Length: 430
Ligand code: CMC
Image 1: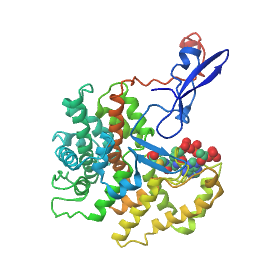
Image 2: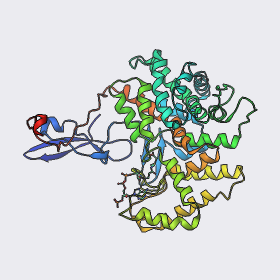
Image 3: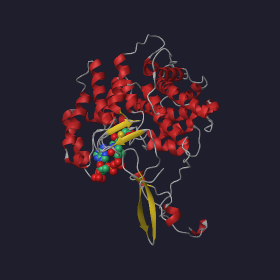
Image 4: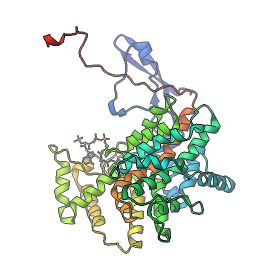
């Protein structure tokens, strides 16, 4: 990469000229890779507030303007005109597929939906009341125990096969996690259905009854999947890249992404948000919760609000709100009491100085929980759905990293503030 400029940093009695690189969009970056070697200093940036960890061509976010684009295409256009599998192709390959490429990709994914039959036994080793995300962490990691012929990361053919398998099998694994948790038989994939309809069927069909996919629900789930498909270097994606930097196999890397996603500050926020809205319960109790969220002595936060990058309305939240209305309308639940609480909470928070000053707006998780609940999913499945959708982002970023000749093992350093050297004290003297 060619430097656009240089900036000079003086550290103690040493000065260093650091290259400045310009991306196609977004802030310029200062390359500090030689800083330690030439000055003896590390940088310190807990939480990566000012640190770019890689260069990437996949997703662009402008948090101040509320912009999200995959490979240059605005999320609003993709949500309206595209479909999830097409978005998967775009994220992986960099371009929208032509008709033939689209058909071939769909065929490939469709023909990898089935799970190794032995995998069903892996589920039965887990407790019935396990959280479905706990099951997902186990099952996704277990893929590397079943598909040995796609774990060699140096073989392009194996990498591609692993990618196809991940995208194809995530819905099957997620639906089985749900079925297992409610004691119903697993439903095999039906390759006559499209990706999301198949997912809905595997989650909600039972062998005793005919299941007809509601097209409004299928469209809503497809939109949810597109909105969650990638989000540049967030916690789970960075976890996948970090795990992959040691050349671990892709299935193991994706299971590390699932683990990282689970937390309430990241993918677990949709579940936490619905719980919060249900706890608030009625519109008249909203001010009480806003008061708690702004109290500096109370650690309480409004779930589904705020974002490390967006300091404006999360563009995904806007689309999600529309999708939420469409699903509730289809169900004749336009008066859903939880939606009313959500709308009122948003209205009050957006007028409140605390939220205005900190630029806290609804994020994607704010309306996704209400929507997924309306589709019939229990809250414990919300983060699972997020993980299914985000798999393509994780695997596209993993692929980009593996194919980057500059890639090396990720190894951050630290500011050590522990004890200096001291002598061991025998037990009887402590
Ligand atoms: N409710 C109340 N106050 C908040 C909230 C919130 N949801 N989020 C941030 N703040 C306050 C925070 O207390 C701090 O105030 P002060 O400056 O007085 O100390 C200020 O805003 C900045 O917060 P921060 O924690 O330094 O910001 P961050 O960038 O480290 O955290 C976040 C981002 C998403 C973890 C945080 O906003 C949060 O915890 N939100 C709720 C959980 C949530 O909805 N997460 C989903 C994120 S979007 C989906 C995804 O990417 O996974």
